[in-house]
Length: 181
Image (tube, rainbow, N blue to C red):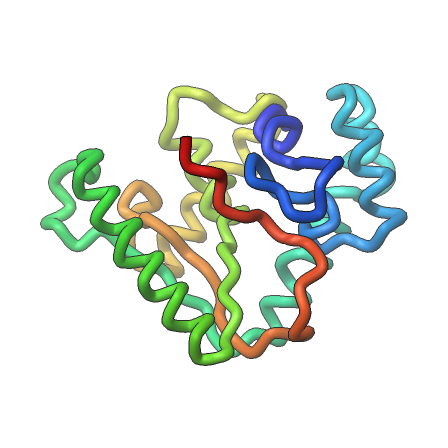
């Protein structure tokens, strides 16, 4: 909840400091409702509990686009699985991932991070559990199923995404590179 409050930029369609609200993949009515709900945790809890907001968001942002993409992929830590990657290794992974993303774009493909399931599964492996502690049982089940599907513990997954042909060629909203200072 707090992460979404911080990263969604409702004011700019091309945001250097966050993810534009118009780029998250929800219809305009859903965007207005989400913006309102992110104003206070009780609102978000109410929408999730009674109006199935999280189910709807997952459907329109993950499930439907995931069914129509070209492929899903996972970047897994390869280093003997002894310890988490150190910051230098993570920068190298990020550099290679960026090159892959740029090459995909050059070839007319669109790439989209798909991190919701990874974040949900990771809740059991971190010291900062979800805001709603009653959901930890579900998070444990997601983590177990996720790890079994990928045949790797969640802590070794560095990135995941989907790739395919873009639905539309012109982008009306997206995150952009922050200015160098």
